[in-house]
Length: 298
Image (cartoon, helix red, strand yellow):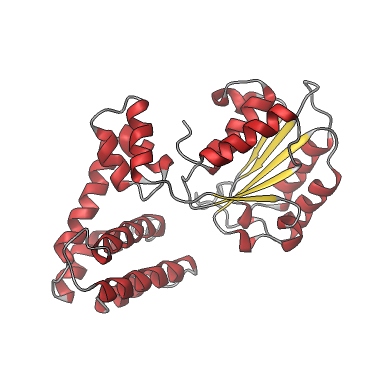
């Protein structure tokens, strides 16, 4: 289900109708903002197949980071072997005689070797091919790759637009709450609307935030302890990043006067501090120390 991004949708529909698609596109935006959904929508149109059946189509190829069999965790990079397999797909003729469509998710995870292999794909692929590079950070792409793509930025969708889309899809009473909590991410809103347990989990994080505002540091840390405990795979940084993103949204509401709290300038400073903490977590610093420092500065 595609929610929002109507300008981009109209652009691609016109390109398909007129037969003037570019060779490569780069979709830039946060996770679950609709990048993959849009790419799959275009792919389904070009290959004349339902989006749900794309994965089994011979002229469709999707690349994402693989799970390391030894650690059970995602590899840090998209490997050169994956890029070479993608190149083999790109260089052959379409089995069905029409288009070939390739998608590379988290394209910023291409390392130097796999990036150079992809560059050759963009330069040398045969026949009618359309490639989509999906990324949260286009500055992480090789400049030579980015320069060969038309770039589209996927901004967060307005909550009301998400709510209307969910309501139209039949999600009923959960539509409004899911849209409000989704941080402008249509994909996340759908997840929340479909999964009551996850929706309750997000409501719990809002409640946690409300309970630690204005409290002493030791009470704030106590409320965060279950997120900072290690399990057999270590601290869950993805989960912590998600919580910090929720907090940023809540503090923006304080800054805009939509929630009670400190002065707007203090809320703005806290938003910046949360952003810095999230950046530190992406650099694999000690999660507990980073969060403790953040809470000390509130």
